[in-house]
Image (tube, rainbow, N blue to C red):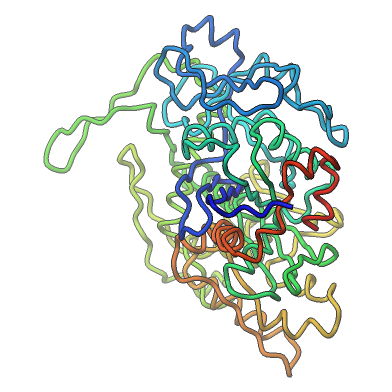
Length: 483
């Protein structure tokens, strides 16, 4: 049992879009950066002479180093992984999930450093399409950058609370604990379910959490501070899915080329005009990196122009909606009409994507994750299905405690529209209440804020899994300590 509270705990929420990290007890995270990571083969790096600013992710005998050893150069956010015979400690691997040493020896990672274009750099994510961790070397690179570069802390002095997906497997949880203790040597660790932290941040012990993230939307029932594993529904419809629809709409329907900012330069010609010059010699740019920068532009258009309709979308009702102009980075102006309502409406009616005029090869064919033969359900139906999986006595409280969070839920009028749809579908004697923070920052960082609140409570300090307990009982104790 860890009982020390003389230093602040570190709270880390590694989401599908961004990583949030900071100290417990604070209102907002100190470090926020993309969870997408660039990588390049080390032999390409050496051949291109682009070696520099690397933090070696190397550790001796499971004892955390006090600081990163840096090479000469300028890329201070790039992280290089090297093989270490003791990097996973004397206990070996957890649950058969071994660190890929071959990947660590041959790949060079760029964390929080994708604004600068580099030849041959590909883009990867620590998560797969279902939100499960797929690349532990990327996870290690992100943790190293978070603790050493962004927070600049000695990790052996601070307990670490880590948010995790509600459907994380036992093997994944044990692997997380093992890597944290063996590599960063914190005095204590705690793994908390993301929907539970979101519920705490909203001040509720029982609620229905609708987490609209980048990688998908997860609806989870939380009862008395525990996530009900049998009442979890996940949909692939999230922020990234809508961003891809926007990008396809611009390029295929509007016939507008979306050019990343690194492909051109702008020179002011007059008071309101610019000359556009194409940058040459970009043949080494990877397809993945170019798409990543195109998605940034499409995401900005989505967040700036799109909004949720007050009622179910019908094309006939939106014919006279005035269009909104959006200027792309290269100066081209796009007029977006009814589509600014139609694209967010896909969250409620996925079949609407077929009405955007996209080519068949660019039209997503989303299917129900639980039954591939069935089309994907909209957000209200997913919520109703989740509530129906719960005990009858708990359903009334869940209808009255729907909490919407996540960066994908920031469309104007989404909360009101969702409450209206659920009210029409709910039993007559049930009160429906949907809450969502009106503060954009709070809604995006709700999970992290919940972790900050939890880790700062005096009554929580006895809940930590201490380093001593880990050494005595192994990583498997995490399932009992953090159910």
